[in-house]
Image 1 (cartoon, rainbow, N blue to C red):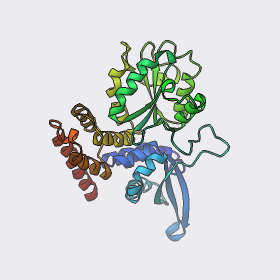
Image 2 (cartoon, one colour):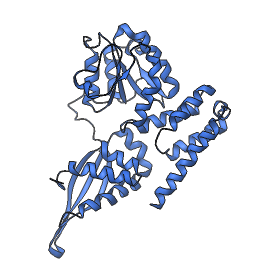
Image 3 (cartoon, rainbow, N blue to C red):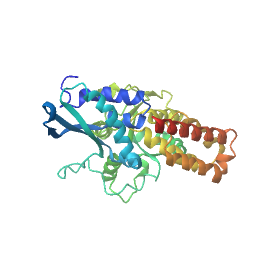
Image 4 (tube, one colour):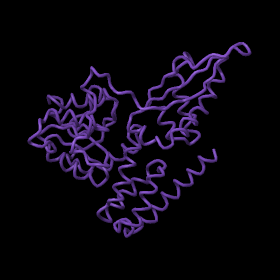
Length: 332
Protein backbone atom coordinates (compact mmCIF):
# COMPACT_ATOMS: atom_id res chain seq x y z
CA UNK A 1 0.00 0.00 0.00
CA UNK A 2 1.87 3.04 -1.30
CA UNK A 3 2.17 5.84 1.23
CA UNK A 4 1.19 3.70 4.19
CA UNK A 5 1.56 4.18 7.15
CA UNK A 6 1.95 7.94 6.75
CA UNK A 7 -1.09 8.26 4.50
CA UNK A 8 -4.15 6.46 5.94
CA UNK A 9 -6.17 6.29 2.70
CA UNK A 10 -4.41 3.19 1.28
CA UNK A 11 -5.31 1.45 4.54
CA UNK A 12 -9.02 2.34 4.55
CA UNK A 13 -10.41 -0.12 1.99
CA UNK A 14 -8.38 -3.06 3.29
CA UNK A 15 -9.31 -2.29 6.89
CA UNK A 16 -13.01 -1.97 6.04
CA UNK A 17 -13.04 -5.25 4.14
CA UNK A 18 -11.27 -7.14 6.93
CA UNK A 19 -13.74 -5.80 9.51
CA UNK A 20 -16.67 -6.80 7.31
CA UNK A 21 -15.30 -10.34 6.97
CA UNK A 22 -15.24 -10.52 10.76
CA UNK A 23 -18.89 -9.47 10.82
CA UNK A 24 -18.05 -6.23 12.64
CA UNK A 25 -20.32 -3.98 10.62
CA UNK A 26 -20.41 -0.97 12.95
CA UNK A 27 -16.61 -0.91 13.10
CA UNK A 28 -16.41 -1.18 9.31
CA UNK A 29 -18.87 1.67 8.88
CA UNK A 30 -16.92 3.91 11.26
CA UNK A 31 -13.73 3.40 9.24
CA UNK A 32 -15.53 3.74 5.90
CA UNK A 33 -17.21 7.09 6.63
CA UNK A 34 -14.76 8.52 9.17
CA UNK A 35 -11.86 10.90 8.72
CA UNK A 36 -8.64 8.92 9.29
CA UNK A 37 -5.46 10.41 10.74
CA UNK A 38 -2.20 8.61 11.64
CA UNK A 39 -0.23 10.19 14.48
CA UNK A 40 3.30 9.33 15.70
CA UNK A 41 3.11 7.97 19.25
CA UNK A 42 6.76 7.40 20.09
CA UNK A 43 10.00 5.57 19.34
CA UNK A 44 11.79 2.67 21.02
CA UNK A 45 15.53 2.20 20.36
CA UNK A 46 15.49 -1.46 21.41
CA UNK A 47 16.43 -4.07 18.82
CA UNK A 48 17.27 -1.60 16.05
CA UNK A 49 14.46 0.83 16.82
CA UNK A 50 10.72 0.82 16.23
CA UNK A 51 8.27 3.67 15.60
CA UNK A 52 4.79 3.57 17.14
CA UNK A 53 1.66 5.12 15.68
CA UNK A 54 -1.93 5.80 16.67
CA UNK A 55 -4.93 5.81 14.34
CA UNK A 56 -7.61 8.48 14.85
CA UNK A 57 -11.07 7.86 13.38
CA UNK A 58 -13.33 10.94 13.44
CA UNK A 59 -17.00 10.19 12.78
CA UNK A 60 -20.14 12.39 12.73
CA UNK A 61 -21.32 13.40 16.18
CA UNK A 62 -24.65 11.60 15.91
CA UNK A 63 -22.94 8.34 14.96
CA UNK A 64 -20.46 8.78 17.81
CA UNK A 65 -23.20 9.25 20.41
CA UNK A 66 -24.96 6.09 19.26
CA UNK A 67 -21.74 4.05 19.55
CA UNK A 68 -20.43 5.62 22.75
CA UNK A 69 -21.66 2.85 25.07
CA UNK A 70 -19.37 0.34 23.33
CA UNK A 71 -16.55 2.64 22.30
CA UNK A 72 -13.73 0.67 23.94
CA UNK A 73 -14.84 -2.55 22.26
CA UNK A 74 -15.11 -0.79 18.90
CA UNK A 75 -11.63 0.73 19.22
CA UNK A 76 -10.12 -2.58 20.30
CA UNK A 77 -11.57 -4.42 17.30
CA UNK A 78 -10.31 -1.83 14.81
CA UNK A 79 -6.88 -1.95 16.50
CA UNK A 80 -6.80 -5.73 16.32
CA UNK A 81 -7.33 -5.66 12.54
CA UNK A 82 -5.07 -2.65 11.95
CA UNK A 83 -2.17 -4.45 13.64
CA UNK A 84 -2.26 -7.16 10.97
CA UNK A 85 -1.50 -4.56 8.29
CA UNK A 86 1.21 -2.81 10.31
CA UNK A 87 3.07 -6.14 10.63
CA UNK A 88 4.05 -5.82 6.97
CA UNK A 89 5.93 -2.57 7.64
CA UNK A 90 9.42 -3.13 9.14
CA UNK A 91 10.14 -1.29 12.39
CA UNK A 92 6.61 0.11 12.59
CA UNK A 93 3.69 -0.71 14.90
CA UNK A 94 0.31 0.69 15.90
CA UNK A 95 -0.45 0.94 19.60
CA UNK A 96 -3.92 2.45 19.79
CA UNK A 97 -7.05 3.46 17.90
CA UNK A 98 -9.10 6.43 19.01
CA UNK A 99 -12.65 7.00 17.75
CA UNK A 100 -13.92 10.52 18.31
CA UNK A 101 -16.59 12.89 16.99
CA UNK A 102 -15.71 15.21 14.12
CA UNK A 103 -14.28 18.47 15.43
CA UNK A 104 -16.64 21.47 15.26
CA UNK A 105 -16.46 23.80 12.27
CA UNK A 106 -13.99 26.65 12.64
CA UNK A 107 -15.44 29.60 14.53
CA UNK A 108 -15.10 31.90 11.54
CA UNK A 109 -17.26 29.68 9.34
CA UNK A 110 -20.83 29.99 10.56
CA UNK A 111 -22.80 28.88 7.52
CA UNK A 112 -22.40 25.15 8.13
CA UNK A 113 -22.32 25.26 11.92
CA UNK A 114 -25.42 23.50 13.30
CA UNK A 115 -27.64 25.56 15.58
CA UNK A 116 -27.56 25.00 19.33
CA UNK A 117 -30.98 23.28 19.20
CA UNK A 118 -32.98 21.48 16.53
CA UNK A 119 -35.71 23.44 14.71
CA UNK A 120 -39.20 22.71 16.01
CA UNK A 121 -40.33 21.15 12.71
CA UNK A 122 -38.07 18.12 13.24
CA UNK A 123 -40.06 15.55 15.27
CA UNK A 124 -38.12 14.01 18.16
CA UNK A 125 -36.83 10.48 17.62
CA UNK A 126 -37.38 10.49 13.87
CA UNK A 127 -34.98 10.54 10.92
CA UNK A 128 -34.53 14.09 9.58
CA UNK A 129 -35.07 14.22 5.79
CA UNK A 130 -35.02 17.48 3.79
CA UNK A 131 -37.34 17.45 0.76
CA UNK A 132 -35.92 19.81 -1.87
CA UNK A 133 -38.60 20.79 -4.39
CA UNK A 134 -40.15 23.65 -6.33
CA UNK A 135 -43.08 25.44 -4.71
CA UNK A 136 -45.43 24.56 -7.58
CA UNK A 137 -45.28 20.90 -6.50
CA UNK A 138 -45.73 21.37 -2.76
CA UNK A 139 -49.05 19.49 -2.62
CA UNK A 140 -47.50 16.32 -4.06
CA UNK A 141 -44.46 16.66 -1.82
CA UNK A 142 -46.78 17.13 1.17
CA UNK A 143 -48.36 13.73 0.39
CA UNK A 144 -44.88 12.17 0.37
CA UNK A 145 -44.17 13.83 3.72
CA UNK A 146 -47.37 12.37 5.14
CA UNK A 147 -46.57 8.87 3.86
CA UNK A 148 -43.04 8.90 5.28
CA UNK A 149 -44.07 9.96 8.79
CA UNK A 150 -45.41 6.56 10.04
CA UNK A 151 -42.13 4.97 8.94
CA UNK A 152 -40.11 7.10 11.34
CA UNK A 153 -39.17 10.00 9.06
CA UNK A 154 -39.64 13.65 9.89
CA UNK A 155 -39.40 15.40 6.54
CA UNK A 156 -39.05 19.14 6.03
CA UNK A 157 -41.12 20.77 3.29
CA UNK A 158 -40.09 24.42 3.24
CA UNK A 159 -43.34 25.86 1.91
CA UNK A 160 -45.41 24.02 4.50
CA UNK A 161 -43.33 23.64 7.66
CA UNK A 162 -42.03 27.18 8.15
CA UNK A 163 -44.12 29.14 10.62
CA UNK A 164 -45.38 32.49 9.22
CA UNK A 165 -43.72 34.41 12.05
CA UNK A 166 -40.25 33.10 11.27
CA UNK A 167 -37.89 34.27 8.55
CA UNK A 168 -38.20 31.57 5.93
CA UNK A 169 -34.65 31.79 4.56
CA UNK A 170 -33.15 31.35 8.04
CA UNK A 171 -35.39 28.36 8.70
CA UNK A 172 -34.37 26.68 5.45
CA UNK A 173 -30.74 27.16 6.47
CA UNK A 174 -31.45 25.59 9.87
CA UNK A 175 -33.02 22.64 8.09
CA UNK A 176 -29.97 22.19 5.86
CA UNK A 177 -27.63 22.41 8.86
CA UNK A 178 -29.50 19.75 10.84
CA UNK A 179 -30.84 17.34 8.19
CA UNK A 180 -29.49 13.79 7.96
CA UNK A 181 -30.20 13.32 4.24
CA UNK A 182 -31.88 15.12 1.34
CA UNK A 183 -34.37 14.10 -1.34
CA UNK A 184 -34.28 16.12 -4.58
CA UNK A 185 -37.63 16.08 -6.42
CA UNK A 186 -36.48 16.56 -10.03
CA UNK A 187 -39.27 18.33 -11.89
CA UNK A 188 -38.88 20.41 -15.05
CA UNK A 189 -38.55 23.64 -13.09
CA UNK A 190 -36.04 22.29 -10.55
CA UNK A 191 -32.88 23.54 -12.39
CA UNK A 192 -34.31 27.07 -12.74
CA UNK A 193 -35.14 27.40 -9.05
CA UNK A 194 -33.10 29.97 -7.11
CA UNK A 195 -32.89 27.60 -4.14
CA UNK A 196 -33.10 23.93 -5.13
CA UNK A 197 -29.61 23.58 -6.61
CA UNK A 198 -28.17 25.41 -3.60
CA UNK A 199 -29.92 23.01 -1.22
CA UNK A 200 -28.49 20.03 -3.12
CA UNK A 201 -25.06 21.68 -3.12
CA UNK A 202 -25.12 22.08 0.67
CA UNK A 203 -26.03 18.41 1.08
CA UNK A 204 -23.27 17.20 -1.26
CA UNK A 205 -20.72 19.62 0.20
CA UNK A 206 -21.34 18.43 3.74
CA UNK A 207 -21.29 14.73 2.88
CA UNK A 208 -25.00 14.06 3.34
CA UNK A 209 -26.72 11.39 1.29
CA UNK A 210 -28.78 12.80 -1.60
CA UNK A 211 -31.60 10.74 -3.14
CA UNK A 212 -32.74 12.06 -6.56
CA UNK A 213 -36.40 11.47 -7.46
CA UNK A 214 -36.92 11.50 -11.24
CA UNK A 215 -40.32 13.07 -11.94
CA UNK A 216 -39.76 14.96 -15.22
CA UNK A 217 -35.97 15.07 -15.68
CA UNK A 218 -32.93 12.88 -15.05
CA UNK A 219 -30.29 13.75 -12.43
CA UNK A 220 -27.83 16.32 -13.77
CA UNK A 221 -24.52 17.87 -12.72
CA UNK A 222 -23.07 16.29 -9.58
CA UNK A 223 -26.40 14.52 -9.04
CA UNK A 224 -25.70 12.54 -12.20
CA UNK A 225 -23.51 10.20 -10.16
CA UNK A 226 -26.51 8.96 -8.20
CA UNK A 227 -29.10 6.42 -9.28
CA UNK A 228 -32.53 8.05 -9.15
CA UNK A 229 -35.84 6.66 -8.00
CA UNK A 230 -38.47 7.00 -10.69
CA UNK A 231 -41.78 8.78 -10.13
CA UNK A 232 -42.80 9.37 -13.72
CA UNK A 233 -46.50 9.26 -12.82
CA UNK A 234 -45.97 12.13 -10.41
CA UNK A 235 -47.36 10.16 -7.45
CA UNK A 236 -44.53 10.76 -4.97
CA UNK A 237 -46.15 9.01 -2.02
CA UNK A 238 -45.79 5.70 -3.86
CA UNK A 239 -42.00 5.75 -3.51
CA UNK A 240 -41.87 6.36 0.25
CA UNK A 241 -40.89 2.78 1.07
CA UNK A 242 -38.15 2.83 -1.58
CA UNK A 243 -36.69 5.95 0.05
CA UNK A 244 -36.65 4.26 3.46
CA UNK A 245 -34.92 1.20 2.01
CA UNK A 246 -32.14 3.40 0.60
CA UNK A 247 -31.69 5.08 3.99
CA UNK A 248 -31.55 1.67 5.67
CA UNK A 249 -28.73 0.47 3.42
CA UNK A 250 -26.51 3.56 3.16
CA UNK A 251 -23.60 3.65 5.61
CA UNK A 252 -24.16 7.28 6.59
CA UNK A 253 -27.84 6.82 7.44
CA UNK A 254 -28.32 3.15 8.37
CA UNK A 255 -27.96 3.53 12.14
CA UNK A 256 -30.23 6.58 12.40
CA UNK A 257 -32.86 5.05 10.15
CA UNK A 258 -32.92 1.80 12.11
CA UNK A 259 -33.31 3.71 15.37
CA UNK A 260 -36.17 5.73 13.88
CA UNK A 261 -37.94 2.60 12.62
CA UNK A 262 -37.71 0.94 16.01
CA UNK A 263 -39.26 3.98 17.69
CA UNK A 264 -41.92 4.14 14.95
CA UNK A 265 -42.89 0.53 15.65
CA UNK A 266 -43.07 1.23 19.38
CA UNK A 267 -45.47 4.13 18.58
CA UNK A 268 -47.39 2.31 15.84
CA UNK A 269 -51.02 3.40 15.51
CA UNK A 270 -52.39 0.50 13.45
CA UNK A 271 -51.85 -3.13 12.49
CA UNK A 272 -50.98 -2.03 8.94
CA UNK A 273 -48.26 0.35 10.17
CA UNK A 274 -46.79 -2.39 12.36
CA UNK A 275 -46.59 -4.83 9.44
CA UNK A 276 -44.94 -2.25 7.17
CA UNK A 277 -42.37 -1.25 9.77
CA UNK A 278 -41.40 -4.76 10.85
CA UNK A 279 -40.84 -5.71 7.19
CA UNK A 280 -38.43 -2.77 6.85
CA UNK A 281 -36.66 -3.65 10.11
CA UNK A 282 -36.03 -7.14 8.79
CA UNK A 283 -33.80 -5.61 6.11
CA UNK A 284 -31.65 -3.64 8.56
CA UNK A 285 -28.41 -4.59 10.28
CA UNK A 286 -28.08 -6.13 13.74
CA UNK A 287 -30.19 -4.33 16.31
CA UNK A 288 -28.43 -2.49 19.12
CA UNK A 289 -29.11 -3.52 22.72
CA UNK A 290 -31.23 -0.39 23.21
CA UNK A 291 -33.34 -1.18 20.14
CA UNK A 292 -33.84 -4.75 21.35
CA UNK A 293 -35.09 -3.35 24.67
CA UNK A 294 -37.49 -0.94 22.92
CA UNK A 295 -38.94 -3.71 20.73
CA UNK A 296 -39.44 -6.03 23.70
CA UNK A 297 -41.25 -3.25 25.51
CA UNK A 298 -43.41 -2.53 22.45
CA UNK A 299 -44.63 -6.12 22.44
CA UNK A 300 -45.82 -5.66 26.02
CA UNK A 301 -47.30 -2.17 25.80
CA UNK A 302 -48.57 -1.52 22.25
CA UNK A 303 -51.60 -3.55 21.21
CA UNK A 304 -51.13 -2.47 17.59
CA UNK A 305 -47.85 -4.39 17.63
CA UNK A 306 -48.77 -7.38 19.79
CA UNK A 307 -52.15 -7.79 18.11
CA UNK A 308 -51.06 -7.51 14.47
CA UNK A 309 -51.18 -10.90 12.75
CA UNK A 310 -47.68 -12.34 12.42
CA UNK A 311 -45.92 -9.25 13.76
CA UNK A 312 -45.11 -10.44 17.33
CA UNK A 313 -43.38 -13.55 15.95
CA UNK A 314 -41.36 -11.47 13.49
CA UNK A 315 -40.36 -8.98 16.19
CA UNK A 316 -39.22 -11.81 18.47
CA UNK A 317 -37.28 -13.22 15.53
CA UNK A 318 -35.46 -9.90 15.12
CA UNK A 319 -34.69 -9.80 18.85
CA UNK A 320 -33.41 -13.38 18.94
CA UNK A 321 -31.29 -12.92 15.81
CA UNK A 322 -29.65 -9.83 17.29
CA UNK A 323 -28.89 -11.69 20.52
CA UNK A 324 -27.32 -14.59 18.58
CA UNK A 325 -25.15 -12.21 16.56
CA UNK A 326 -24.18 -10.43 19.75
CA UNK A 327 -23.03 -13.69 21.33
CA UNK A 328 -21.00 -14.53 18.21
CA UNK A 329 -19.24 -11.16 18.46
CA UNK A 330 -18.44 -11.80 22.10
CA UNK A 331 -16.89 -15.18 21.23
CA UNK A 332 -14.86 -13.65 18.41
